[in-house]
Amino acid sequence: MKTALLLIAHGSRQADANADLYHVADVLRDRAVGDIVLASFLELTEPDIIEGGKRCVAAGAERVVLLPYFLSAGTHVRRDLTEAHARLAEMFPRVCFHLAEPLGRHPLLVDVVVERLREVLEAGARAESDAGE
Image (cartoon, rainbow, N blue to C red):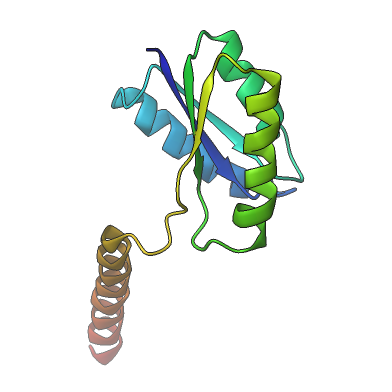
């Protein structure tokens, strides 16, 4: 079964902010996590979720995993993404659509936070050391 991963971020009018999701999509595509890996956005930029889903199907996906690139399961995930999931399933009844959980409480995110803290503390220690010379 040909599988697509449709990453979904909030979206921004700032291209640099949207570039992060495209980067993640590129890395995942390079790692061959699915047959198709695309980025889409809830609002403020294109492609939106429905268009992203259509592109997955047009590329031959028989199963599409909608993966929220969100930290928490707030209104957007619980309402908006659930509605988009239902709409895509209705539009393409022969395709299996699955809505994954947001990134939020995944244990590896704690590791990312610890790493970011370590980076800042090491950079701060170097800066403090340079200032003391």
